Image (tube, helix red, strand yellow):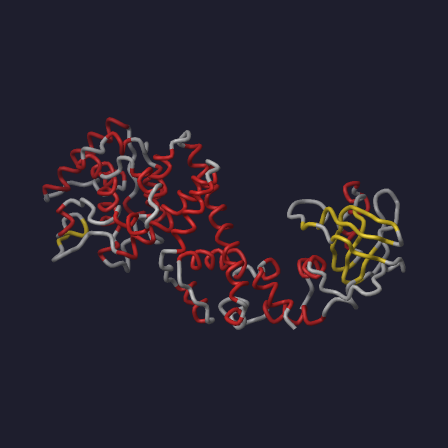
Length: 427
């Protein structure tokens, strides 16, 4: 297997080499005081390193290459930005190199001094024929390492998603209620219909909800009409009335509905049909007065779940799962798993983002506590981790694992994961 620079960066960063009698390829004694900080942007690979070379203390940057000749190949010998590199760390020193100012670059060759078991462990991970690289080892890792890794991954996931919340907040000119309604609407699409629900939420002014809060029929007409489901005549009185109301709203606010073909019904149970989800969302909007403030200040998980219980869904949906398609004994209310999914993907996200953006840490912490007290999601990705022996007991862990899977496991980024690092160091 061909070595990669990120492997050498790992060896350098975590000092996985014999430190006794270190010397440059030129024979100068070398003592590493600080390896420096990884640089994720353009320029040398590590900055703010500190070391003693031949009795002189140096502070500056470190560059990593597989072969020293890559210094020339990458044009560093002519780049003034690399004059502050104080050490060139390579696997193999195949030629001496100079800085742009003409001075020779001190070089450390790792080929004969790095710990061999690190490479063996690394090859075992990246060549594994498992659902994810450390499938065979992760169950035996110290639970404390699991916890620290999950905590880091969860915060990373929430901070990444909160940047989108911040963008939407700017779009809605600082209106948290409108921003909240957008993400709440998207969460009602769950995984299958998340995109059309997002397009629906973006298709009209969120302030229309507050304008028609006391008019359920208009709210339902607005939502179903914008979703594209009121584009034909109906025989049933309820959808026919919705269509008339929507035609009025469409003209008044210059609305453009979505294409109904965007919505997915195939291989779904009627309780998950987008028409039913839209009816549930419309009913929640009837309760939307101060809804953002209400959920933001909920400290008890049962109190929060109660917001989504017994929604005032129109009676039509007790006997229908689509317009003019009747059903016997149909229950249109949100189920427990659906409520928990909405809380995880909308309420916790907004609560965390509010704390981060408004610099009120108590709200961000509250979001994490909510996740700790919610049951985990259940999907094929998480079942892979369960099969490896992991106990996934809360949404805190399941959300962290989804982040690890998306950003590390599926991309073979074991060198940047604390679980992977622990496995690599193990003898």
